[in-house]
Image (cartoon, rainbow, N blue to C red; front, side):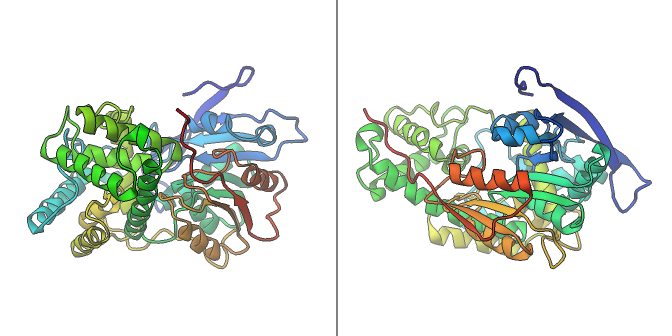
Length: 455
């Protein structure tokens, strides 16, 4: 866990909750919680601000320190910042799906099926993944849902002695916050939902994300073409696209040091979501095509270590617990649809495909919004490919009285206290301090495409 500023300390503890909220006297689990107290005076204090970093599968225990360090000083003075590991994550009964159908093999099998035989192999791997999760999670398989985590949040609120839950959730955290605002409208306080997951089924969301990533990748191809001296990938988006295809095809034919097409796609998926990662991606493509070295392309964090195994397992377990999954036929149809959009789609984020073979099928979807739901402040980037803007607009329509802050001409995931945009940070901070939503939706101007470094 990162260290807090000098003079402040992190308090850690647990809150005991039922494994199954419908059986309050049954088995229990302990939710790990961390807190950094407000630094201001008693008069400045507004309560406790629960924070969630996203996922599903993101560890929240250290996030109280990491995110708090980025918050405006007024917010740090006003709120105890409270992080927690959601059920299935980190120190809160971490989900373990074992090999997950070979997901952690290195190099991994090409995740993009090119023909009927490849589609059958892909479905078989999904079936194996679902079986591994059923074996690893056991009785907890159906209990690690977003709805259950929202109820855990209310238990944390009660344990802290707070009358309301104030919340800042990023990415999947926005989905979790919307679920809380729907289930506990009378106890929902100031709710900031940043980089919003749309109110669709998880598989629908995954497919929409995959299409948005293709649009973003085209933008990145054009951006890389703007500095041919540095990247050497071509002077047009088409030439850079061709270089990209050569790199992926070559890695599919001959992986390097355990780095093949699956690892390549994961690296690209990660890079597309933040503009500061575009230049390293271009450097990595250049280095590999020139020298065969994949060191620059390979992400620093190892895929398959304990943290990533837990993340990948919790991601699938939560998504599949949140509602009925797609049929195998739908999975194949959507893969074919993405291939029609582009011969090299990124299917890395199609995690809910495994729900086609899930052993515990929920009967209803996590409730998100409705006439009684509490309002919230939603924050979104215009060109965020990870959580497309359309999702924020649709969720805002389901939360009565909600307002949307949009950062136009921006291409990154994660906005408030992340992009350094004064307009966004000012509007969000004002809401957290006063509880007053803006009179209307807010439009802020972003920085546009990143500038190429002078050489």
